[in-house]
Length: 151
Image (cartoon, rainbow, N blue to C red):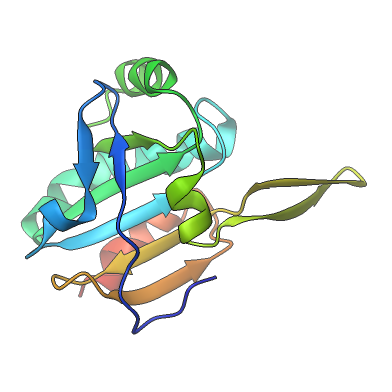
């Protein structure tokens, strides 16, 4: 896991429409950068819908929300439309940002070990530095947790 106080790694990834986004374009705003496993899984859906419900409050606090998973652009489009998500979802099919932010780790589930995304949320300040790191977050609680972190 990356630590608070360091420069956040840059990225250049496509959103649900295939348009590329970089961290640099959000200079001057707080960035809630959250990494999740997969579109349409129960925890990931709760987390995304929570961010969607609170999105106007994030905007009021000059913050953007960006979700990242290894799902495809097409998957993000369907997921975003199904739940009317108002924020950016980035497709990291090559695991570039996922590995740069050190969230691609060994996971154990049902006695099996595999590599996967560990649910993690980074709060990045207006200058592009990591302000806070939230490790192994609870999906349903994370949106509210991040809104409080902005205060």
